[in-house]
Image 1 (spheres, helix red, strand yellow):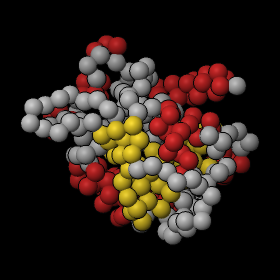
Image 2: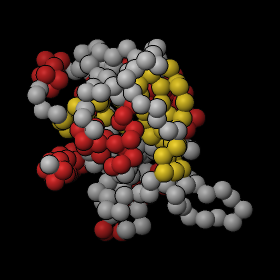
Image 3: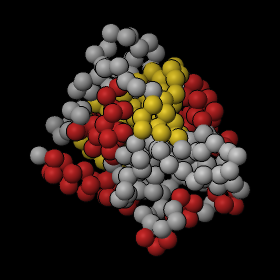
Length: 250
């Protein structure tokens, strides 16, 4: 497995999508392989009861009915299970990250405390929380709008301020993508902004590639990127999407 993953790292291609469980795939990479880990894992928070949590993600995250994008795996855990699982893959991701490499993980308000716990249990230094302001949400009288999601971020040990990286904002304001191929797809421009936390020319890892937005954003910004996606239909859709959009960008 390690030899196979080393071949992936030494490939001349700018990007790759690997279909498989990230915990198994990450084991195959050598320590210090990646310059940044930037990802959007399943939140496992889109339901009020455990029975609702077990429903298909198409039911939990979309009102589009039969026109909704395909369901994705890994979103039915309770909070304790999610935190343990997140700590496991974050620890494995830190093992294969270079010293000082940044980690950025999307999450919502429900799992924000669990996410910061898991990040630190895995050995990363937690450095803060950035905000993705989506600009819209269902209004509720007497309540604040839930119009933001969050980016818990940190580093693998010391992170010198001399890194050749620009000053990045703490709040990103972009609406949800209009034509999504994934139920929880993030805006491409948002991801193009966020990947810039990686040093120029670096190799970015996304253990939960989904529709391939992080990988696509990384390549468009001049990085190399490897994405891992457990749901086979999305691994195919991500590859097709990246090929198509890179061709259009030429």
